[in-house]
Image 1 (cartoon, rainbow, N blue to C red):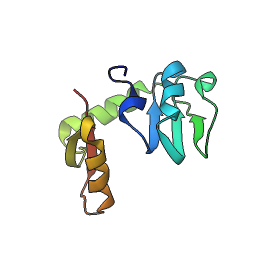
Image 2 (cartoon, helix red, strand yellow):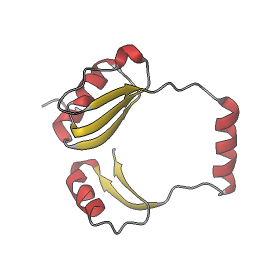
Image 3 (cartoon, one colour):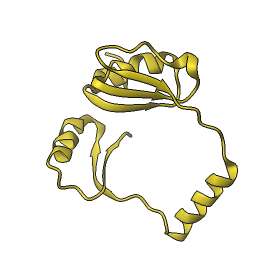
Length: 114
């Protein structure tokens, strides 16, 4: 088993946001459940072939320095902040899924990777 390989520790994922492309995109599509989505950012050549009802798409993202500065200012003023219900280690991803299925969270369930 490769240390840290996503397909070795995850499965039945709804959505993967891939910022690397290439081999990472190819491996990421393997962890998606039927009906899941892979969104890759690097480029259209990094979209792997779909499988078993999994959809893979490329999302065009352009740098927006001014927009990022405005978001930073909102965060620094405390006007924009994430609401986190629970943080769970990646190794306990199944528990995080169970928490989400209960439908009683206020905020996001975060998987921590250290």
